[in-house]
Image 1 (cartoon, helix red, strand yellow):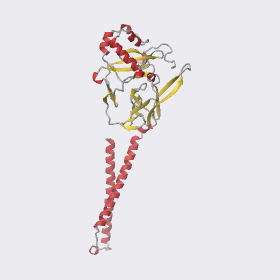
Image 2 (cartoon, rainbow, N blue to C red):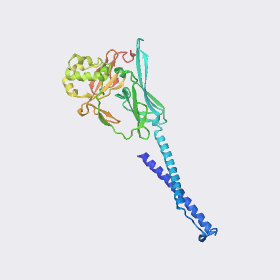
Image 3 (cartoon, helix red, strand yellow):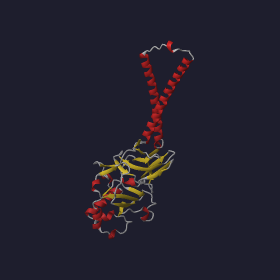
Image 4 (cartoon, rainbow, N blue to C red):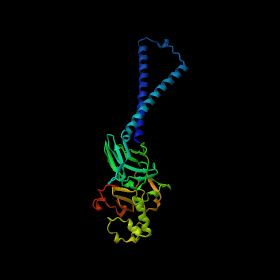
Length: 353
């Protein structure tokens, strides 16, 4: 709205300038004619004006066209300058994913190291940056993974990097993952840098729910392994409903977790048996994953599109990672901070592989 009012103001100013020039020229001609009459150089009674209507029409039309072309040119130039100023910060913000194969600890195999990069090369900060990782060219969205849900401020001339190596162990992929990011510029305008690197203004878009397609399953068949945190969460919820006291459930519990032997499984089933996980897992630390659960049945089979969607989570499933076992459930209910989890000695410093 501010840009539209500015353009209207600029157009009105240009028109007033052109009209002012024409009026000034007309007044000047009238003044010269009056002076010539007063000095007797010309006499009205001897003045003969011959009108050629055809010539006058085309001359006037040409003058109007010249004025119009000048006005349009000035207006177009100003629009271009306004657009360049509007895009000046946004066009300098980018995001991408890099991959590099590194030897494992004993040198017997490679580990694919995966990094999200978010870069601001402009002279001003941008705000509320959100990143979303995807596989299969946008067909399978994984969320921010190890990046924060919202990066409140990305300073000028600053690049942030987020290691998503462990989160990506649960996905068998041949191509490099891609990432999209949205952010707010200093003028409050919302922008998106999509997975192809294209920039677009999405300030007028509102968040909304859409139905998931059949091929948008939370976990594909080949990714249903202990190294996929979402797969482990789904197996845990399934066991909770079918056989909470069975061997399958015990195999899913993290060895670092305490208190599970005192759990009332019937109560746990009543509280969370009908919940479903949201589509993305968050990784507040490399060896810790958090998956939110929702109890709203109307949201089952749907996904959120756009920024700012509020999700009322009924609970959170916290999982821990080890190279030997993959992901295991540490707790369900309230969120658990990574610093409140005690891992076996050397677990967090052990290199992958």
